[in-house]
Length: 305
Image 1 (cartoon, rainbow, N blue to C red):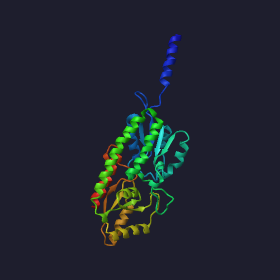
Image 2: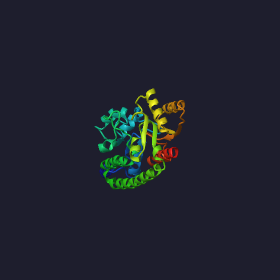
Image 3: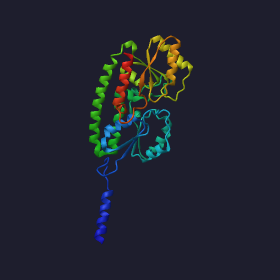
Image 4: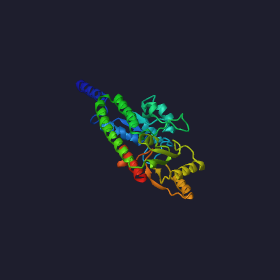
């Protein structure tokens, strides 16, 4: 009887002794929670099947205005590691992340990017532009922090994480080259991107396009009749034929711009819907970072060239 009891205790101890990896066969996978779909997609690519990934913000969700639900708080509590964008993108969740980082790894991937690669709000230079995923080279810098943090948390899978990152970055380099080829199809004088809010400055900066947004960097910013009139005047003066709506922002403001231009005898059409702060539905091409980016490029080029 004592021998049986001894063997039982040894078996329990062996089961309880884990190693610092991201989940072997029969084990529950570590939970990685992200705020945006862009970050979730990068984690899935780099971590592979080693972890379970949950994104709090799905298609059509505006991270600037997002408030965590009770369900979100429970998911965050259960997480082994949390990744968020930072740079005030998830402004209404800052206090939550600050509290949780005392007990677990909470990583703001945008805040490790060198400040000379981060854009500022022209109207408010003290504010950073958080939409870093629209400059592919800057996104690679932020994404590398995911690889680094995952490796620190789950060290035995570090080599696999590094290899997955290498392959992903090769795809991103191809995407960057393809994007510049497509943008070159637009006549230089027509390379002007007008959207609902200032989400595309990184895209414009890295691809040689002028960008104008009706609202500021955050959709939380107010806009008024003067802002609409300024955009209308710009469109008429520059003879711009198309503006773009965003999947996570109401198209009410852009419709007002179109009506304002019409009153001045200038016809403007909706060039298409762009993914700005949120990606497409999971399981679709636009539900991946690369697919979302390609959709935006094709929509912009096909409408402006």
